[in-house]
Length: 248
Ligand SMILES: [Fe+2]
Image 1 (cartoon, rainbow, N blue to C red):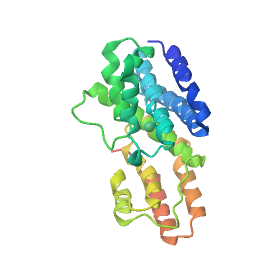
Image 2 (cartoon, helix red, strand yellow; image 1 turned 135 degrees about the vertical axis):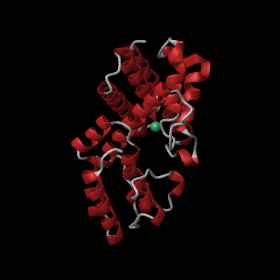
Image 3 (cartoon, rainbow, N blue to C red; image 1 turned 90 degrees about the vertical axis):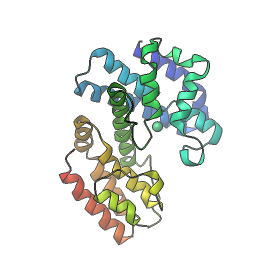
Image 4 (spheres, rainbow, N blue to C red; image 1 turned 180 degrees about the vertical axis):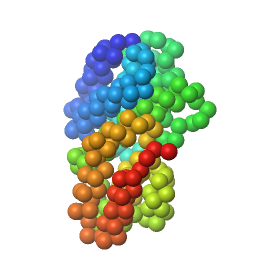
């Protein structure tokens, strides 16, 4: 497996989707940033060179389902369309397309698991430790880049001047990730991104988030934007949580 060739194939595959609009182009950029973050995290874990390459491959392919999702639904909303992670695995399975990215069949299960579980609430505990690790690397990298996109306003939530709903806010204060199913209003979308913090797996990921100050930047944007005093206060309380948060 040569990661350079895999990147070339990815660019070739996504070529035709570029004409569908900027949304697909943004996903291509997201993909390459996630791939690079996977490399950084994998290196921080002192993985062997070959495993660093596998981590990059997982990052490169994690969102491959996004393009067919957009072509079919013009939407990236999984809840009203299709689970893009499962779709990604289907895309690679079809006509053995995965062979255009790597030929080593022994890593297929690992790569597919990292794609399938990158967007799920948690990683199944019956996966091998090694597979769980690659899943967790991709999940961290993806979360970091999503938070970056919030600070760039490339992802933006209209909170409709609402505050976080009680259960969702309680989750944040108890330092737990938020389950998408608990979302009650538009502001809760924002809470989900903040709750990513508690799903971060690796010290290096946390270091990247803190170094870039993504949380303070995101909180600043929404505090400034909302007129809802309760939301302003909830955001401030979360800011304080971030300040002292240490991975358990
Ligand atoms: Fe994704």
